[in-house]
Image (cartoon, rainbow, N blue to C red; front, side):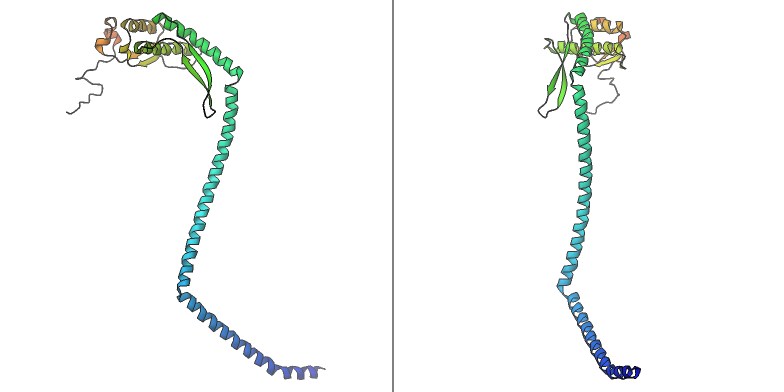
Amino acid sequence: MVESKRKFIAQELPNIAIDIKNKRSQLNNLIDEETRLSAIVTKSDSFEVLETMIGELNLKYQKMGEYEHILSQLKTVEDKLYTLKQTLNKIDDGLFSDEFAEKIKQQVNKFNRHFSAVSYELYGEKYALKADQKTLKNGQRLYEFTAFNANFSSGKKQGEISCFDIAYTLFADEENIPCMHFLLNDKKELMHDNQLVMIGKLVKSKNIQFVASILKDKLPDELKKDEYIIVKLSQNDKLYRIESNK
């Protein structure tokens, strides 16, 4: 049995060797063909175009990654804005509720007691402030505060501003709201002398400083005292001592 197998293998070995030789020759031919084709592709313009396209494609992928990152950031911001908008809507619902509107009305009434008292003392007229709910075109809601009186002249308007500032200081003290006890004013030369004098007396009695820049010839004689003047300026003595070159 073993002898028969040996004889069979011995007879087949030459055929196997010839087959291996043929296959090896075919493989070498294919390798040579691959080398030749690779050389052709490498030397051709198509390979350069391919390299260029691969480079451009990589840049596109890089850009795409950057855009995806930006889109992710925008999505995060949009989500945050949505959350904030929801929070603001809740706040608005509270601010424009009947309960809060009533609270504003009460505070305005408290302020108006001071506003009307100050304006009556200075002008013999009782000024007042009102608050109205208003909705803008974009749907935003707000409270609009306006003073209702018949003051149209520039002087009277300056007087109204002074009455408001003084009244607010008194209101803030009453409500324990921290505030400055000095008022900075401009254009007070538009006001009548009597009103300036009366304002001086009023703020002194209320422990409020009233600071106003005004031309000397517009200042009432009663207020032309050194005790009322902090600093005097002129063309020859300016605030920062800066001279203009002409």
